[in-house]
Image (cartoon, rainbow, N blue to C red; front, side, top):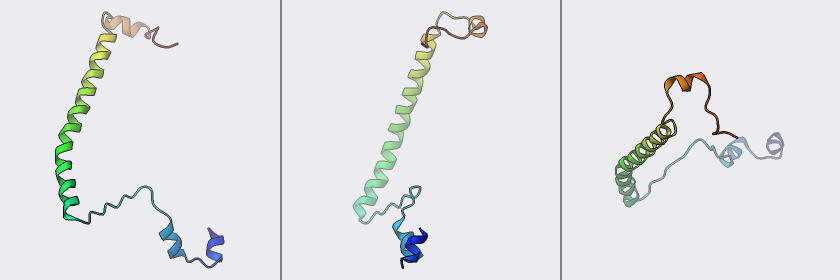
Length: 85
């Protein structure tokens, strides 16, 4: 980086070249893009939340089925065997 500064490239132009991967600048130029973003934000949020809830409930049910038939004492006595090679 010092070599570029020594070669005559200013610090300002170097800062413009480097992109920050942690910053996202959303440029909505047209009214259509703004309306589309607003509508899809409101419509997709409940769909995503419901899909996440369905996956969580399915995972919980599969875990309950996998532990079916085991008592609390069995689970505390020793770790489960047979699920890991």
